Length: 178
Image (cartoon, rainbow, N blue to C red; front, side, top):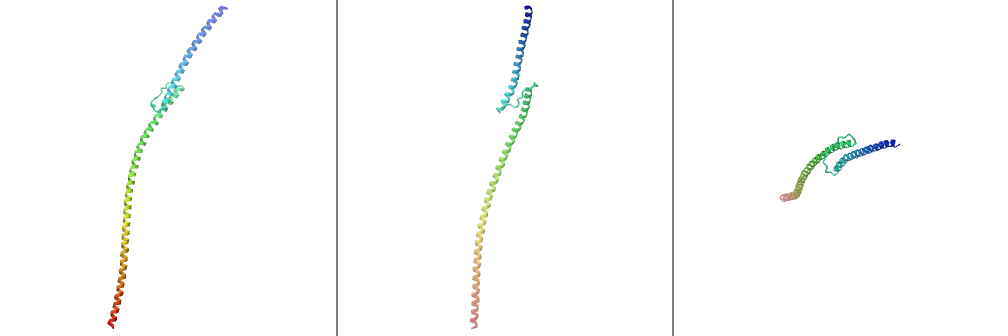
């Protein structure tokens, strides 16, 4: 019995040794793979975190050699960064264009304000001239009225003189006739 148990125990010990050895090797490999995966995920996380601060380098690209899910995530992130960099360049260009348009608009507003001020001055000048002209017309109208009154007065005097001459003439004829 001893002789049968001994080889079985040795076989059992060898199997256990190999099982423990394989278990340790698989555990080390598993831990190594998990650390590798976590480091790759951490790189993506750190880069996204860096982007969220607003001070990130938009030229960064993550290396992507693997064809697994994390590799696909990394490739998608790199495509996003290219598009985001393009959008930011467009935004910066638009900012410059808007700044230039703002300056042009400010200049145009200044020119318009100057023109309006000049037109206002001209309107005031014309208004003064119109008032002066109205005063002159009023003065002329008063003079014309005075002349008309004088002419009417003169006409009355002439009619009175004519009546007196007619009366004097009739009186003279009557005296001559007597």
